[in-house]
Image 1: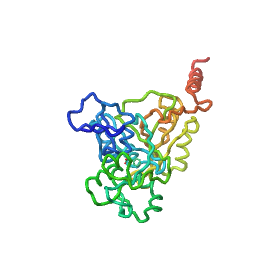
Image 2 (image 1 turned 90 degrees about the horizontal axis):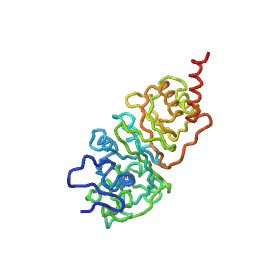
Image 3 (image 1 turned 135 degrees about the vertical axis):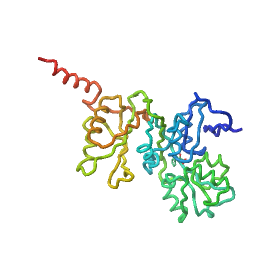
Image 4 (image 1 turned 30 degrees about the horizontal axis):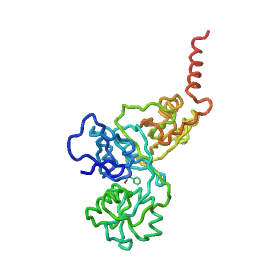
Length: 326
Ligand SMILES: O=C(O)C(=O)Cc1ccccc1
């Protein structure tokens, strides 16, 4: 039985998972970019569980079936992965414990014997299609997209004989794993695109601060309040907290209400981050803490003058002393 393809480990098909072995759900099937991200972090003995969709993978950890989940959260070309962002924002709470960055480039693949001229429909994940849209318009004008739950799912369907599309956009690994042939390699509108994946667990485990961390939160702005967004941003600016991502999403069932998903530079153990979060909590309707974790790029966060932990402690000591001085 094959247990790996290149650096990708395949799920175990026999035997009971050992309860003390870490288990990871991920956006499956095997051969997704998500599987590649998982392979960067999971120990060799890990049990891995492919799931059909981001939400299904997250639910596997919510229900206790797996200890961790790895799902895509953001792409450098197409932006946020809304299925992940919305489930993090509104579903049962999960916490980000790690981020993983994977360079993505796509292969246009088909069953052996199929040529570019035969291709009318292409199956792939919506984020993959978005990253190859211009290439498609230039090279295969008129080719239609059929969305699949993942890039490898499209490859798997083709290999099974599915005839709803003639080709798929997937990774080179998936192309070989599912016995397809490459029609075009390195398909992309923006060479150098990366996708950021997050590893999630149930709340309770907070990674240690490293000095090169990020914190993710979800907030809902008060409605009918002029300058509400300005007031939110002000909480970060005055404490020298840099935002590395901010995205708005409509709140389901509440037309006109928006939630914001925010990544900020820093760890919740740091004074300036805590001070900003206290301000956010005071001024927004809903605040959800989604984790503090090491940055994948390892870049140390810059600390503006007057915003280090020592600066905050000295300032608090000065205020405390006002009560004890005569
Ligand atoms: O479908 C996959 O292989 C994924 O891991 C999600 C995805 C899709 C497109 C670009 C990056 C990640």
